[in-house]
Length: 464
Image (cartoon, rainbow, N blue to C red):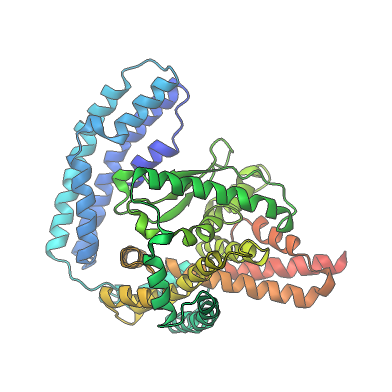
């Protein structure tokens, strides 16, 4: 009940009468999709596959709020009517959309709510997929999907612990220079997260300040791009607040890639339900990750060269590659001086790296080591110092999408390994820009195949 309304509002273009008719067609099909989801919920229930109670509670809260909104007041109706009026496209668009919502979408939503209520009656509080039939084998498969490697849960868990200790040592040194010497790194970062000096007011004016700040961070990184890449990508990006009607269950910060035909720019969404989730020092590295030179940059290559790239390359986007590149992008801007003179900005970058290492620990903890939701939340807080609300949101995400969050640090680690390998093999012939462009120009491939691409890059430089 979140994805399709957001897609219709942010990605479905309204320029012509045909676009409006297509919007209504998609809105009508939304009802069919809801019924298909409901059928899947009932099918899974029959096989003992039921989401944990806290996931179902959140889902039902969102679903009931969705259904309770009068059809004429929904974004589904308002978006079409407003944009059609802006383009001077005559038609009874609001009334037609409202009829579809009342007659088709809402009845399907009611059927789904009934199925979710039934599932909630049979759910447990256990968070991990270990509880499911063949749960251990299922999680092993999900780790292969999420990381495009054959690493085991134990290997990934230990990677997170080892890298976490190394990052803590770097953070401890900076924190001490800021006069923060008492407590663990996580405790000190937790105190900094609550420090009012770093928070914007939880008001519309405060939210507008955050949006403006993010736009400034994107502008600040653009002058660094010639040192990162030979490609002269335009990479347009817009910053939007996560829509209020979906913010309770949405991610904290995420990207919608630019359309492959270049007609729509990348959209960087920031969840501003509570500005206390966003100490200002956390935002520069998040922005580098989601926009430039992270996701928006990688996506811009696909959009601006779509005529040169097989379509399947643009559509696949293996998780560990895409997220590993974005995490590597965070490191690139630090290496080029983005945080020089900004100790808190660098701490925000390191906390973000620490956070991704912690993900390896808590994801495998939940699904392979039978950790409770509460233990995983507290572990994430202890390791990273993130706010309790943010930690809970993250753990609920890992519960719902096992293995996906492991792709970030595993992918980042592999890119760094390949970079060190290329530097060793090429010596003075190594060019960071060539290496980065080689990575991006693969389009987004499994990590095992990425190693072959870098071997090809090394061979080509030797022959030049």
